[in-house]
Amino acid sequence: MGSFLAFPLAKPPDIFDLPDSAPLEADKDDVYAESHSLNVELSETMHRQNMRSKKEMTMFYEYRQHWSEVVEKLKKKYPQWTSKDILNLRYQFEFFVRDQGYLLHYTIFNEMLDVFQDASSPEQRRMMFESVDTGQYNAINFEEYLQLMNNINIETPVPRPPGIEQDRDEIMNLVSDLSEANTFLQICYDLF
Image 1 (tube, helix red, strand yellow):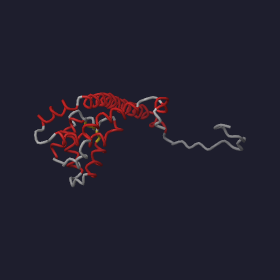
Image 2 (tube, rainbow, N blue to C red):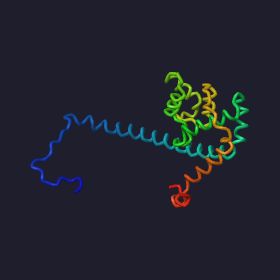
Image 3 (cartoon, rainbow, N blue to C red):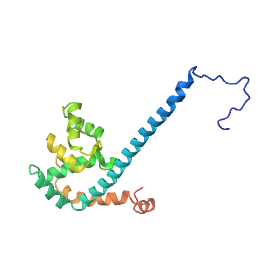
Image 4 (cartoon, rainbow, N blue to C red):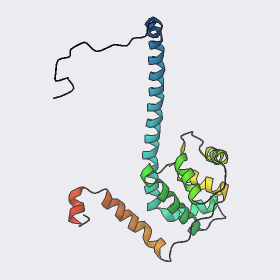
């Protein structure tokens, strides 16, 4: 089996060639150079985003461990928000970016505004997003997200039931630790 024909061919296959192939040969170098530069640019962009994503994941885990200190700093920066508002904004951000390396990409931002039933145009959304995406990554981190929410004044979601704020960080840390555990430990804890 394989990719070879299993029977002999009665006649050779037809080959279609352009009559003026000489100019195409000269253009091949240009096409190869252009595709190479596009590949290099794409690879560099992906590498920058991966490195930023790893950095943001680490920073977000630090936020969780020292959440009360983070809230105090953020309340000084955004005095109109209560600690509950900041916590709700964190929940929003986590919900939309959990599988995205803790970076909110523009496409997810559009979906988020649709969920919030925001009536702004795509051009306005792009301008809002680019106003906080100073590094031109086409993705924003948690601090830039807070700045964006401050700029557009979207209401925070319905508050969580009382008592969940105190336990949520501990529960999220446990869930995070268990999800990162190897298969044997997950079986031992009867997670399957």
